[in-house]
Length: 338
Image (cartoon, rainbow, N blue to C red; front, top):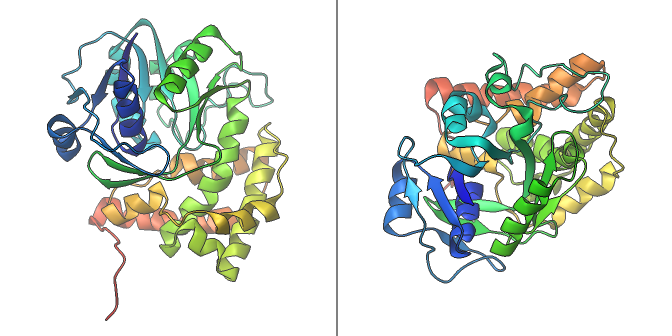
């Protein structure tokens, strides 16, 4: 099988590296210093369970240098980068190609392929012009959720933390456990990252969003890791209120979650204190992935009539930070006081 990993950040770089090490026919698409690092040194994986003592040699190309068609394409861009890249990414797959989208947050196809009172509703926050819906047939899509705490120390140098849920969850848009789903899971499992095919990828996405919509967004406005924010009583209380709102929205959207909000927040204090991917983006001055992590929740709140006042306030603050980054070129880095 000819595999492409389109997007070589922390998750894409990790996935491409382990597939390469496992002997798969895989190509990574990278840019700038990441491309240079991959072609001259390879990918460095650092961590207690998944780290490797030596760089992993990979085949990396720049956008436009790919050699299609590819059979399996892992699209590991951030969600807000998808519309601009959609046409090019689709052109790289053959007629029967499968596109795996393991982005954080909710997908643009959320109300497609299943019975729902909101069937046919397009989430405009995620696909404002309908580009993604027109470009990718839902039959070609496999949804994914990456449970792999990562920290990008430098281009193609990835630090990995232990996680009890260390896996790549996979699901069809229509919730079937198909042959291709199990085949993709087998490929990543052989490479060292457990592939977990399931019957409800939307619920899995909500489960991770319980963390991302709260701790990633709080990190934007507090500059704190989840461990730090959960260890400070006022922000822990705010996190609990936000978590309860996410649970209510998931239920209203058709994905009831049987979770204990109090325990979820308390358990975050036990995590390794790593900055979230969104906080890393803030400090690097990169556009933030807010639409799929929290702005879409405000759209679902309006759609379903379920109030989310705490999410709305924190989202307003995070979006203001993003405006500073996008329009003013601001990178917000921690400062050590003398």
